[in-house]
Amino acid sequence: MEDFNNLLKDIDLSAEAPKEEPQRQYYYMAKAREYVKQLSKRLGHTPTCHIATFGCQMNARDSEKLMGILEQIGYVAADSENADFVLYNTCTVRENANLKVYGRLGHLGAVKRSNPDMMIGMCGCMMQEPDVVEKIRKSYRFVDVVFGTHNIYKLAELLVSRFESEGMIIDIWKDTDKIVEELPNERRFSFKQGVNITFGCNNFCSYCIVPYVRGRERSREPKDIIREIESLVADGVVEVMLLGQNVNSYGRSLETPVTFAQLLQEIEKIDGLERIRFMTPHPKDLSDELIEVMKNSKKICNHVHLPLQSGSSRILKLMNRHYTKEHYLELVEKIRREIPDVSITTDIIVGFPQETEEDFLETMDVVEKAQYESAYTFIYSKRTGTPAASMDGQVPEDVVKDRFDRLLEKLSGISAKHIDKYVDTIQDVLVESVNDHDSSLVTGRMRNNTLVHFPGESGLVGKIVNVHLTEGKGFYYFGELSDN
Ligand code: SAH
Ligand code: SF4
Ligand code: F3S
Image (cartoon, rainbow, N blue to C red; front, side):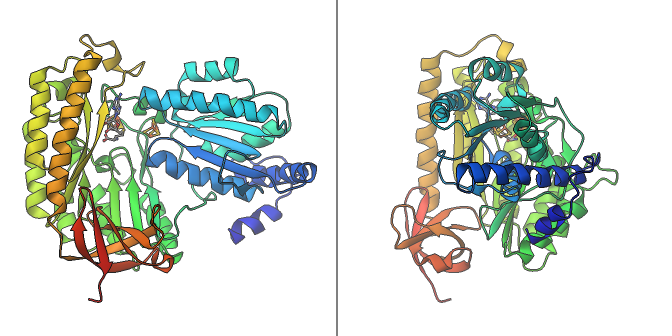
């Protein structure tokens, strides 16, 4: 942070903005600082900001970058939306994510009426949909800035435009081939950190809107990833989560192609790093090389999140997933055989168009055979513009609901069986927080991602400790600190 302070102080604002990045953004951050200073005088306090993040880890990571920029230009973070700048980083993967945002935005508009200096920004995946932007332009005219997923690094430049003009600033790019490195960053946790390895997605699963709102897949250079992780570790990070919509296709489009497994081996060498996680590996591209690297690694956690989506090969084909039920099950078997004590979790969609009872029973069969440690289940949501949205045979709501309930019941029975497995063993746990409900307890994660609660103090947060697991509770454990 000090580095940015010095860098921004020396910028000559009477000169024109540089054309190249990231220098251009440094210039606009310095300029935005001046406006925020003026705002601060007018308000009589340091302006506050709040980012509400919806959706997945990609958005969570983007919000950290956005917060980094806001803090550089002089805002201080506030816990609530009662702030001088409120930014919604939105998700549109399912319709209900989308509806939630409109509801909250309406409420925010009312707050702004009583605080005219307040600014409101909208960004993230929803903003990549033209009809959403149109709706905001027409019906939510109190919004100050609107931008998408490809240009978050331009936040300071967009705010300067807003400070210098009246009305809503809208800047949405359809796609980009650019990755801008070396920008500020505000980390939420001192001890763990998400690290982007790819942006975008090329898979076009037929139900999914992500490729349309996040653009084509781009991989970061290995040296940029390694450098980022090295500096995180120097800053106290012990666990990284490598992020990509399909981490298994990492590196294919680089000038010098690198596989995901090779990248992992390089990351493994970083001294001081204790745990490596990744999200999400697509089953169609999960290689033997990756399983081998995981098996031999001391740092890669024994957890694989392997989205199934459906257990029916017929539906998988309609979903454009490029694997069959049999291939998926073979993969699960191989992973369980090669990686001791691995936990396998998944995502499942119920009610994809044309899903019959037989197809659903295939999904139940995979669930039974794969014995997932846990699973996220979703009701199929029609996303305009995706191929599945115009498929015949949308499944009636009551049928979907019935299948969904049956699936949940089956999954919870299976997770409960797993949780007894490690009772009375000692496991290493990275302590993540003081327990939300009982402050005499702390909460952490085992290497296989299972949650553990045990008596302890806030000083343990960020440390990896040995915990004796005393009791399994469905999907988490109770335990106690152990000396050995
Ligand atoms: N890239 C990741 C998933 C990103 S979206 C992967 O391929 O696994 C996270 C999850 O949301 C998906 O795994 C899927 O189960 C669910 N999902 C995506 N689109 C959906 C839709 N239209 N309706 C219901 N669930 C959906
Ligand atoms: Fe969506 Fe499929 Fe890409 Fe995942 S791999 S983000 S489900 S299109
Ligand atoms: Fe949602 Fe965008 Fe993630 S649509 S799930 S926030 S990539």
